[in-house]
Image (tube, rainbow, N blue to C red; front, side, top):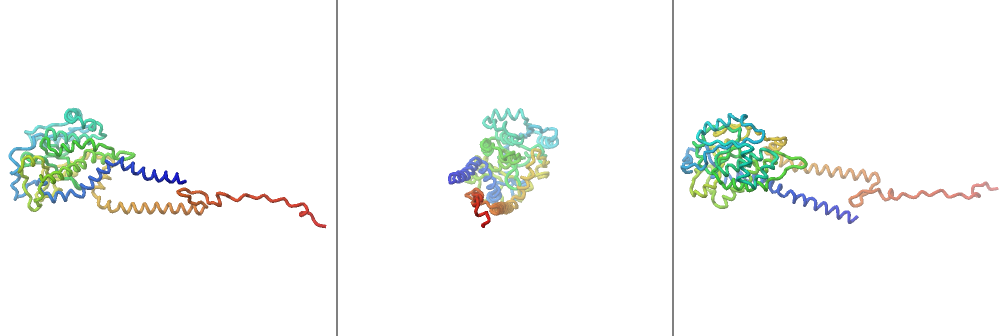
Length: 388
């Protein structure tokens, strides 16, 4: 019995430890998400130099200090992979090419994309080809082509409202909009070639290529955590914290007195990143979230890659505070219910004459060893006869 109890205890301890070890990568990524959600806006408040305000505030020199030469090559990148059809997005594509007649427009397809990744990023190719979803490949591809060529990436359902070379955006080394409820969005990215943030994003691709969900896949979470906006944001946050430690990103600016993006030290400025904001420094009006029109773009909100789990995950992201408050209550309630069921079962077993032996139940002692039935002893004949 002691051996059995010890074995059960060992399994009860070692099995959870083995599971935690196996899932350590997933747990680390979830920790990154928690840090992002809890610190993103604090980081923005403490380092207002992260914001690029469009239209520029009246008190700002409208970005003149960013330099005269564009940092971003005049290249528009579009990605059409899998069952996506360019014909379905011709209006959006035309809106951008019309406003940028002097720009090169590259449409990446399955064949050209795979060849490009294989030639320039061979270490990523096995992961790129092994992804279960086209959106995962589309995400990695946008990071890779911008890292190699530079330029502007736009999702297929994004209409252009403003010529980007008429704004200071093309003179900034890296720009993308914010995301809800926290972080940055990869539906629009403007970048110089070889930006170190994109290098960091690509370097982390192999270590984040893991399956999410047992016994079935959870496609939305799998994409977001492996290559999508949550992954992009987590690496972005780590990169920005590095800029702060290196004093590349000053903390003197305040939302009430925003500085203009300044080239300053050109080598340091070339490694900076910016988040789109409005004149007042708010990220929301520039977010490409659902069907929306911003000062720069109109977003169709197609989200064609969303799968069965998207609605649940989006609900969690929108109401995460409520769920965080409710979840402990639910866990406690379920635990109490489980304890109540166990208690009732024990009472029923005891009522039926069973008793607990260690972690096992066995019949009560009286029932386990019933008294032997004693046969009637024969009665003497004389005792049965009538006396004279």
